[in-house]
Length: 94
Image 1: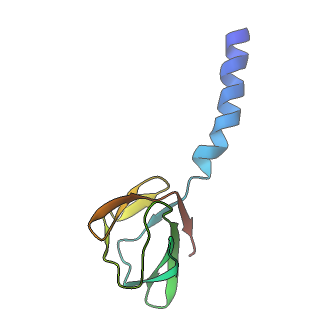
Image 2: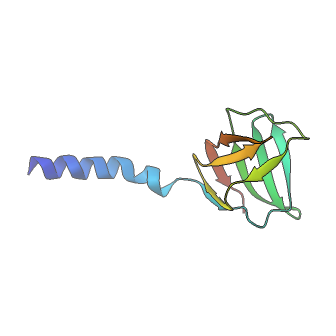
């Protein structure tokens, strides 16, 4: 009975992390805008799709940005200037 209680407690504790993980479909993006040297916003036309926080890679307005896959989630990677960089946060804006 105690094992069931421990498993149930861990499930309740960890479940919100899976529910709130940020994911976005960026396959249709047409442009991106640099907010900070570590944050970019992807757009389709004038509509913002998602904000990506990439703390380990510094970007500038002339950086080459390439998606490794079109559907991205927290902790996925994106190519910045030919280097794979891990996204820490994907915030959906649509």
